[in-house]
View 1 (spheres, rainbow, N blue to C red):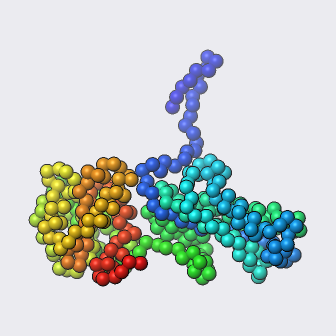
View 2 (view 1 turned 90 degrees about the vertical axis):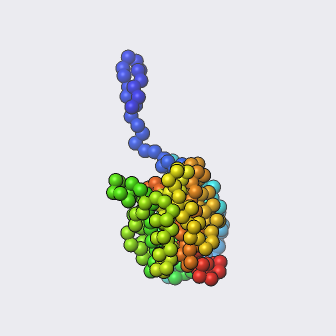
Length: 341
């Protein structure tokens, strides 16, 4: 709180009651959103819109142009909306004869630290208002209805669908994509820490990884805590692979400290390394913090099991499962001989 003197009186400046969300520490991911709304045109105006014979001109084409502009101007219209470099804006106007309505869709996509829901909604609103403007000379009793977000995807939350759902044509056209599932896949989580194994502090990283795998549908018991060192981990990995576990996430022991031996343990039992995934993990983690380049995070294959060695902090574990979640099912399919999608 700052105090300033004005005219002999002390004036206290209070913090603002609003703020733009701080997204600096979020990782850019591919984002997509589709919004929808309708102009209820009525029986007289509807055919004039569809047949493109309104006095002001072709309302459907102009609405698509206005929707593009509206999506691009979202941050100018809404003060706390982040400016985003949109990579895709597509506006569709679909006549619905049964209701004498024009149903408008706006799809937006980008790769950014925040989503494009507001851009999609701004595009729909601009398109609908333009339809309204061009139609009102022939029908003043218009209504705009049902504006909502149809779905959004991307970020750590994956796919979100509006509770009102989507019809078959909408699903076929937009094909919303969720994270690939690991339903029923046997997985394991191992925490490497001398202190945690002695009960000196509670393991917080392992349970986060367990929760992340379970959200994908994986079958996984609670996190198992092992002491630091090569052999405790190496022996456990051999046993898990022999028991048919397909994915194992470890947390801890990937740093530069004298007791950090997790990468050495992985290499001692590995049938082959998966260097690309390890480098991808470091590169994506560096978007959160430059200290990620000090990590020796590693990925190997032991029999039919993929092993991912992640850093030990709670925050790094959460970021790690967010980074890996979109890749785990496909990586496992490739181990089993599947091809690229």
